Image (tube, rainbow, N blue to C red; front, side):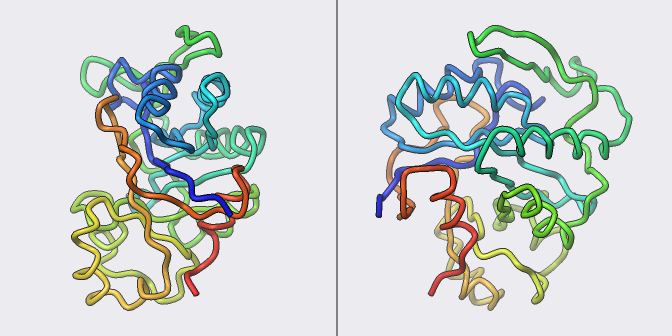
Length: 240
């Protein structure tokens, strides 16, 4: 068992709302400086910067997990994590094909930049990534699992694009075993309102769009091993 300091919800410059300084190498470097053990870059509806993130993290001695913050058809945000790069990129292609064919306008929404493993800009993403894709929240657990991954609803205590705000409640037949709360001070209130959370593992991530906002090392995940699969197994299972 290893207790891993983590931040599993970070945006790179591939997200239109991500700062230009959020390049893969900069993110990995800041995470190393802060003393984290494991990170996940989870851009809006894309995994396209994951190859560069994993390469940069390896250079800094960090564990990086390929991931995505998906926007479902209900406009609910959820984080999807994968054990390897290959299924993450297959998932990326499937989701991208199910986004509306609306071109990004950098002057309005921001840049959507792809970086290579030398931390050099090598492309841009054409479709606007902040739109909802045609995948429902109800289908997302099984869909992510079919790629060997796991999902958890993102920032359920926020007023925008959260499971509770958009649907009004947590469906009792939900499958997820871990939920993300942005501000842990909200946990008691949410548990009183949503009994489903009593059996969930609770994690808190930064949802960082700027380098200074990446979490300090104050929360840990007790993974069976220091690997993407170890972290994913912890997130997949409910609390005892």
